[in-house]
Length: 149
View 1 (cartoon, one colour):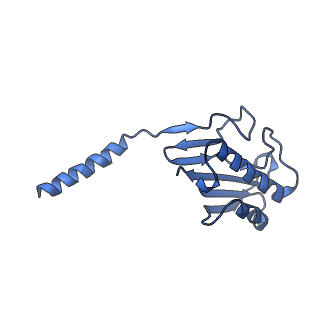
View 2 (cartoon, helix red, strand yellow; view 1 turned 60 degrees about the vertical axis):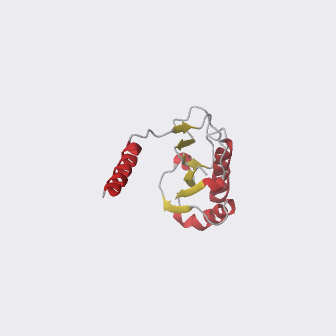
View 3 (tube, helix red, strand yellow; view 1 turned 180 degrees about the vertical axis):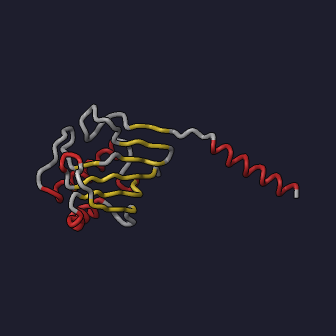
């Protein structure tokens, strides 16, 4: 009985100690894709979780979409994500969840054809949805969450 009480007390102490744990938060030190002064950070790490800002198919350093529509923008979005990750010591393999927002959901297969060339199995979990009014009139926006390995 005493041993069971000691185990329960230790478990309770472990749980309570985690409540007081302050999250360790680090922000990417500089912009890689978006121009300096954008009102967000491209990548934030909270404890062991990586959060990427939504990316659209802009030319790095400019707020201008690459020409060519869904295929060109999809490639640029994924190149941008890869650059942000690599600049911060991570890679595409760190990604565990992506959310794709498409201005025209009927172009999902065109996006998917490009998307799958940036990953190997097992792929990150993913959601896709149609969205009206993406920034700069983009055809696609992609946001991702990752894990520090």
